[in-house]
Length: 346
Image (tube, rainbow, N blue to C red; front, side, top):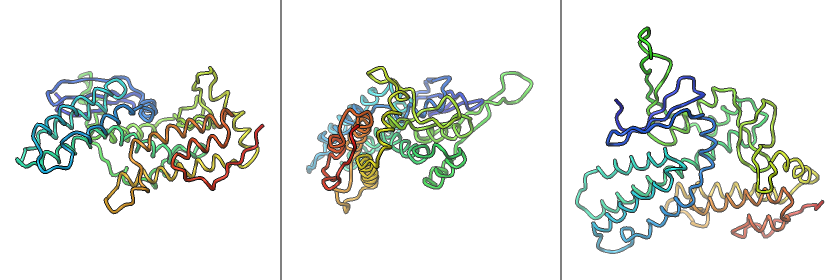
């Protein structure tokens, strides 16, 4: 019998089962998951509608500046927030479960009878709703560092890079127990059960399991997405198929030859902006009132820029848009006026 919470069970770490137990004690299983594929799927989840619904909560009466705060305004926030996880039930069932569970736990905090309590509780609920989105951002950062430009590194070297860049990730500990054996000969079998407190912990545990397997994550030079190569050889392109029926493996080499003919300032500009946007998003996450808002980027703005820039990069590599158009699409905030894109058209 499990208490409410999130559990991961595995016997060989190449396959996992996830158990979700609601506060009412209802169990839901997601079985036979490949942890590596689950990681790759997690960084590609489209939270756009979910994010915007959370942002809209800030416009509710509870968060407006005024002298009096009504309990009915708090109730409106709670009722609206409870509906939002439904948007990700299909694309991220574990994230939806975690959000629902944590909201119900937050609502159990005793009301001290002050209006400030309602505002504080409402803000806490909004932060809980953002957990899947913030977890994805952290996971993308981990992938960028660990797999972005390390295709020729060994797995041990990649792990050391991750540990050196994000030492705080290795402060997580997991409660684990051996499950009862299926026969009567042994007191327990090989299957382990991990108790997980946060969505990020699930992803970190899957990442640990990845590093104990022979599979290798690589980044496609063409579409900039991550994938698992079919062989152990260095693989630059994935097999993702696009609208024209062609794959990155077919499109990538020609695009790379065009780029390799010269030093490409347009792609250099992309790298410059990518680092700036990452830094501004990080400042937003750690924001305080003394910071200049011009040097911060909220979550929605960051995703809008990142997704559009990645697509523009691929179009540019394929020769579908010019260097000037590429720069125009990625330079949303007009920061590269003095950055000349030079590209020899073939």
